[in-house]
Image (tube, rainbow, N blue to C red; front, side):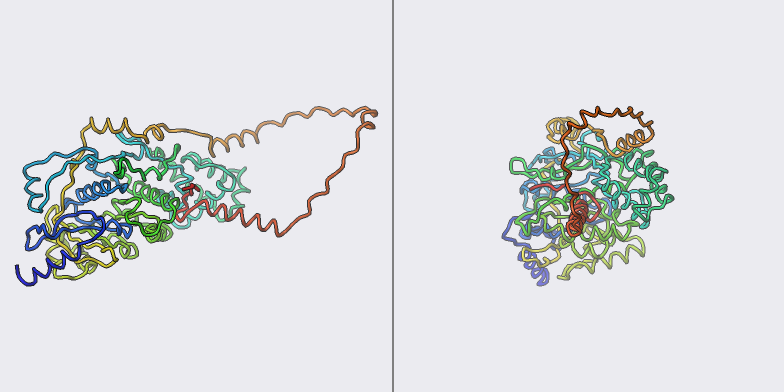
Length: 516
C-alpha cells in the first residue's frame, strides 16, 4: 500500500469504529480489494437522522434494502418498506448458501448465516398474499386526495373547504362515494345555501373535482379507500425480540405511480401525527423506506411539498428514521436532501450531458477524503456503493467505496407455500381482511333528501280540555331564560375551532387522538 492508501485505510477504520450498536453494511474497498479490517457501519442511534439509498437501475439498491431491513429486524427495530418489483418477499424465508456467495463473503471476512425474518405482508387493494391496507377518505385528508386527483392549488383549496363542510356537519367520509355525495349535495338546489356558507367554492370547481373522482372510480382506484381503516401503530410490532418487517405490495405502481407514492406519504403522515415525542433514542422505533421517492415531488403543489419537508424535519423527534429510495439525489428538493445525513450511493450511469451534470452535483454532496468520487461513482460494480453516514457524535464519516454484505434471508421472492403459511398466521389479516360498509356521508345525505321530499303527516285536530280539567291544573312555574354571556360564547367558539383544527395534521389527514 502507498502512504496515501494507508492513510485512507486508517481513517476508515477509525471513522467507522462506533462503540454503540450498528448495522453492518459491508467492508471498504482499498485498491479494488475488500478490506476485512475496515468494516463500514451505520449507527442505530443515528438512523433517525434519515438517509438516502440511490443508484441507477440494476446496481443493487433492492439488495441493500433487503440487507438493512434484515439487520434492523435482528436489532429489534420494526421496518416498513414497499415491494415494487416483488423481490422483497424473500425476507420471510431463510436463504441458501452457494459456492459463489461463500467465496464473496470470505473475501470480506464473513460467513453466510441463514435467517428467516418476521414479516407482515400488506397490499394496497386486494393482494394475493397481503393484508389490505385501506384509509378512509376522511383520514387521508384533502391535501393528499388533491395530490392523487392532480388538482391545482385553487382546486385543492376548494377541496379543503368541502372537507371542512363534512367535518362541521359530522358527515363521515369513508370512501369516494361519500365525497361524491357531499359534492353533489353542495351543487344541488338543496345545498346551494350551504355552498355559499363555506365560501370560495364555485359549482364549476366542485364539478371538476367530482369528475376527477368519477374517473378514479372507473379505473378501479376506489378499492384503496374504506373501512376498516389501517392503524399505522401496527407497524411497530416486535416478536421474540425481532422487529417485524412490514412489506407493502405495490403490484401496479407503474400504472398509478401518483396514487401509490401519495399513499406511502399518508402512512408516514399518520405515524407522524400520532406518535408521541421521543427525543434521541439509542435505536429508532421504526425505520420507514420511501421507495420511488421522486414521484412525491413530481408536479407537486407548494402546500404538498412544504408538508413533506416539515414532516421529514420533525418526525425524527418521534423516533422514526426515514430513508428515501430513488435513482438520483437530484430527484429530491434541496430542503429534503439537506436533512439526509446517511448516504448509500450505488453506481451512477453517465450517458448524456444531463447525466454528467447530475454527477457533478452528486459529488458535491460528499465530503472529500482521498477517494476519487468520479471514479467510484461511475465504476462501482453491482453490490458496491459509495457510503458516508453520521457518526454517533453527528459528524459525517469519511467516504468509503464499499463492497456491500449479503443478507441471510432469500434474495428474490419467497416460495408460494411459505407466503401462504405466513398469511394464515398473520394477526393483521383477521383484523383488516374483510371490507366494511358502514353508514357514512352518502347514506346520511340520502336519508336527509328522502326525509325532505316525504309529504308532511296530517296533524290531528286538537280538542279542548274540559273546563274542570283546566281549572284543576296547577299553575306551572316558568324558568327565566338564561342571560346571554358573550365571553362564554366566544370561549366555546374558540374551543370548538381549536378542536376542529386538532383533528387534522399538516397534510390535512385526520388525527386519531390515540392514547399512548
